[in-house]
Image (cartoon, rainbow, N blue to C red; front, side, top):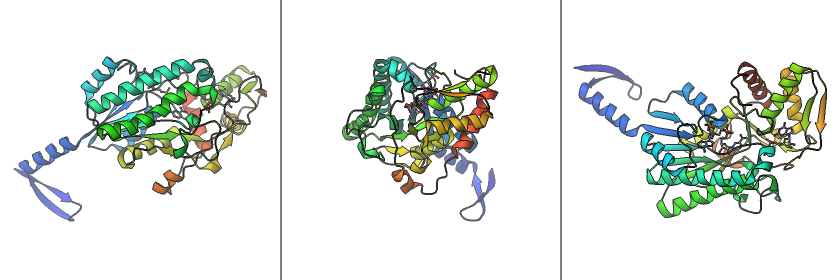
Length: 345
Ligand code: NAP
Ligand code: GDP
């Protein structure tokens, strides 16, 4: 028995026997990538899921973990999940995550939990011979006193901002671990450094979440209840926001094509940095909110800015077009309204 397929390389029909097809399937199975995403239920994990479901690469099998699959603070549970799925590649997102106000309250937990998670995940990746790992740092872990724009070489140059030192030191150690695993064991572990991320599936909690989901939830409630919309702090600090779908595409690119142990910043251009006040105005526009707006300056401003350079990324992807922030905010607002009951808040 045989069948005919069109060979796009030779531009002609070719005849394949059952044996050819079996050999081909065996080769495909051998080269199948099993990509396990830790933290797959969160903001970034769900964006990666959205992107890969659109792409449908036949030789890639994606597994999206949540804390229900394994508490990655626990070594035995971590190893069990690696044993179960035997990933060839890992995108490591799982972490204790939060905005400025959660960090201010729980620096010790941020430090300990993230160190435990990172140690368990990277050691399992080494033991289970994972071919490549891409972990996630953040631009908020850079030294507080620094020159701008920040670049990838500056991570360890001085103490981080005191508001989130627990999270920052735990995240910085991922870069140290990547270098150490490479030097001693030849592991191909790297990391990316996103700026503030926002999008569908974010944590919209007022106390625990980041600024954009917090502002979205506040405007939603102000509009619904006819109450003022309160922005915390002065509104003057500056941030670069990246839409979760853009970050997802860039992280998938990094998994496939970024071949360096040292990290790479995944950020919009410096010109796209906005103040918190400007970001709040975009949320107001997206909701068409007409009520009163107040600033609660008794609340912390946190780090004034952490302007990051994406020059390294631009060397690889000079033409990558980021989603305009107004569009990303509008899509996130629509998602929040449509998923209000089930959204984290
Ligand atoms: P997120 O929405 O809060 O999601 C966190 C994910 O980690 C969830 O899937 C959560 O699982 C999982 N997780 C937390 N603790 C865990 C544990 N002990 N065991 C197993 N899984 C655990 O966070 P995100 O915004 O997507 O962040 C993803 C990565 O990007 C993190 O490494 C973060 O540091 C980094 N990052 C985020 C931002 C940002 O602005 N959001 C900026 C820069 C970098 P459950 O759903 O089951 O709780
Ligand atoms: P950061 O970027 O790591 O500092 O963390 P956030 O995403 O929490 O952003 C904090 C900045 O947004 C600070 O300048 C806050 O004063 C300001 N901000 C204004 N309103 C809010 C809010 O409702 N929630 C949060 N998390 N931050 C807010």
